[in-house]
Image (cartoon, rainbow, N blue to C red; front, side, top):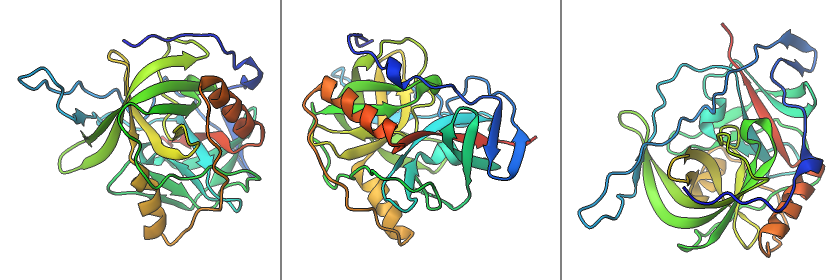
Length: 277
């Protein structure tokens, strides 16, 4: 597995994980504390080619029963448009964006892609800062910075792009993905990446080139959507992202500072799924 180095602390970002109770406006009800459940199980390892190179196809087992869980979402407009992963909000009875310890703002206008692991929240919280969406795919070897809340804790995962591939999740559904190789995690941790799903992956240009989708812990691989997934979903739902400023990221320290800035203004937040029953 790729090395998971420390070196830069995100201690100022630490927040209380909402596991027991969420407050959705006036609709208040105790929620069960979810078990560790990323709502996106680890990917199966790709089959090897005769020459030893992996086939760019990954299997995802989505057969687990839906249960309360947490993912990540990020703002793409100042008037309430947010992106997350489709599997994070699938089969949820209630969905909420975190507003603080043990609190969340309920959202209900959610559009889920049928061809990628992307979902659009159209009635989310307004945001004074938004993330820019990339139109082009990065080249193999490009740096990626996966941002979000694995196991409810803020973190950045540094990776390098392996290349495009496809993810098979169930009969009749194949999704285009980008596969990334982990380089390091900040802060260093060994727990699962579940909870980072739905968060943005930024490239060195500072634009979102993918939505975090799945991970292979054993091999240190991360799967994201391809850049076109978010843009296609917005076009299909007749929404448009805001005009975000694109600022380059000069290495991991800059990426950590960027995540800190987005977190401080609430442009990247945990998102919660409540499953009744």
